[in-house]
Length: 166
Image (tube, rainbow, N blue to C red; front, side):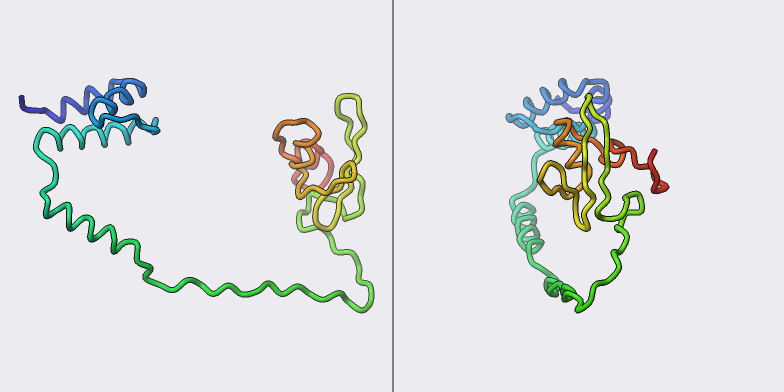
């Protein structure tokens, strides 16, 4: 029976993703983890064509293996990692620098927010945020601790893009 790939592909385009996954199982004899329709259609079409017309010759398979092994070779040397130089502590005190993100207040500021009838206090640090005796890397981490769900920390604490309260 001659296989008409144009008709096969057209029929697969009308199938649901689950039907394509079932067809994959028939063609390959195993499950697929993919749910990407175009990928499934292309791979199934390739497999059907390979089964109908024959697979690669043994010579072509050996050459493909050689090329695959060559692809693992590194062509350039890895970049040299330079150690990060940390500035030493200054001999005299310097002015507190503003935080890297303009939306945040200066380090030392206590941000207050009402949430579910509780008044929450979060202290802005030079590197992170203090809440209930613990240090968090981001406002989002604090908001997740408070709510148990992922929140954008800037939105949860009401900071607008212009640096003021929203």
